[in-house]
Image (tube, rainbow, N blue to C red; front, side):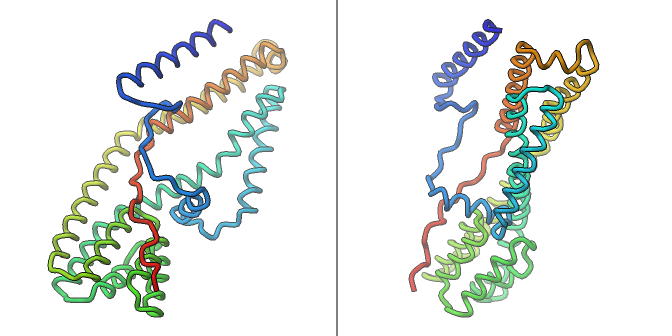
Length: 301
């Protein structure tokens, strides 16, 4: 057992040294992380909830679900392995399932928004060009035909426009409600055109729409290529769980898990399973486009 642990630690050290010199990676993560602008923790949480469509979530109910899964995971694991440490590990892992579920919901919401933006930008280009509508009117007309999860943000921005007729402040409200990098770029393009005028709005919107189409298509291709790997990832959990249940009917069964050696092996196996699950999710995660125009624009009266 000690030899195996030393081999794993040595292999991990070789991996860090090689990736540091060969690829310039740094940090303790197993994959490089994109550089991103630091945001306050509260601001990050609020933006995450908005992107997931959970800005009105009841944190008490959410905490109750987490606690319930923690207890359930711990009890089931204790019933199988008869140990406190394995039960605690699985309980903590099970308690993260609601966060993972909301993260998947957030990703699906962002995918729908990314797929809708090229069409919406093209509509704004036609409305502001061929039909000669004003930029605010074109923006709100397009917002009425936006996906359902985006319409509340457009409605809130429209109310701000009707009250103040302040387009910078209206754009800031819309950007806050959508919390999306593409929305930031589209809104800033419209804001600049509205503030200083010019005849190149059509070209700017056309270039932005083309860029969004390429980005959406690239992400679709990447997700399609990962379909088999994402399905296989579930075997990291399903196969060991089935083997653990089958082991209860072989030899000494559950009593073998309760021995000190058995508990050590179980804990080591659980750590490997959880680590592989998290590692697989990290290396298959597509990079998210970072918001760079989400500052306090348009706050002036």
